[in-house]
Length: 235
Image 1 (cartoon, rainbow, N blue to C red):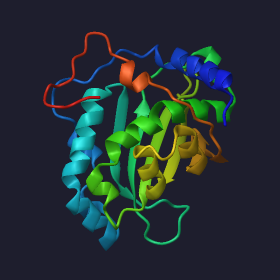
Image 2 (cartoon, rainbow, N blue to C red):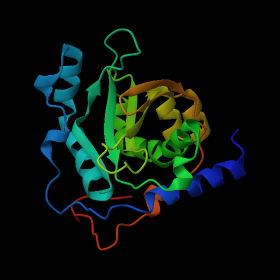
Image 3 (tube, rainbow, N blue to C red):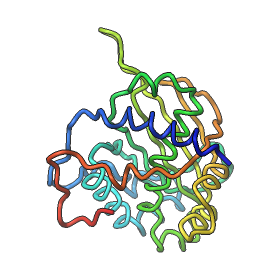
Image 4 (tube, one colour):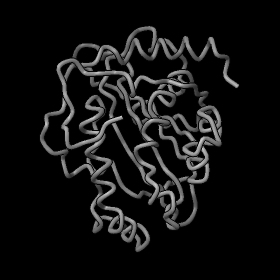
């Protein structure tokens, strides 16, 4: 179990990074349609069938992220039933791939890679899973799990230098997600059972074992002057 004082300290440092958001906000317009992978873009019958059957749920997820968490930018085709490369066979996980709009605080940048990944896992993975894992998808026999991929600015780039993003991808089997959402597993167990891979820019760092703790930032943070579209129910 993670040391509670350490978890709170890392959460505080993560807050230092995320509370300096750039201030860009989503409009009340519809979410961009290109964020959802279309059925004809799948490379297998299984993926295509999932995409066709659950296209409405994917559009709803896209709209919820766009309107309720405007500091997260879903990448083009960032929502879909992708095959994790580290798993054999035509295994399909519902994947959500986002960029986090934050400016890195020095205290956050000085953390180890594992601690930065732990902080971002704690902040986003549990909350995004609650939006991703609908009852219909939890009961879907052809769905094997869920993937949350988050990228964030590693450090302020020097003048004239390109920005470098850090990325963490958490692959979580459906039975564990179900246990978490039903209250049979906690956040720490969710992190323990996840397969997490990290990147520094384009350089793959390999598997990281994050710690995790309760972080209510997503539920409490409000973008100044922004009101979500009333058509969308936000937490």
